[in-house]
Image (cartoon, rainbow, N blue to C red; front, side, top):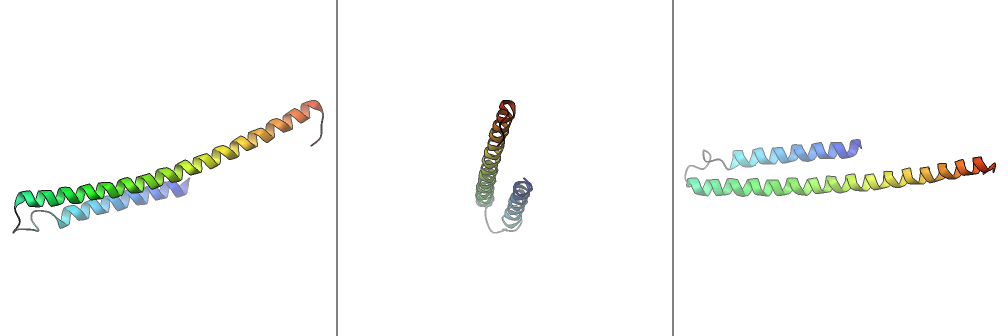
Length: 96
């Protein structure tokens, strides 16, 4: 579980860094010769691409969590089955 949490934290940090970088690099103060609408368009494009990257990382984290949950669920189910069989054999007086 720690691996999924750390992956999620890294993804969030990368996304926040990309967002901050896009705002700093494409701010109207940095591009004095461009019009305000062009700058706003560039910032919007950078924010959109950053949001897409964050979404892709979120998908990867979600898939990892889902696969880990499936594995744990199967292990719990198998353990419960073995426990039930052992109980049944104990009730019947059989040795395994």
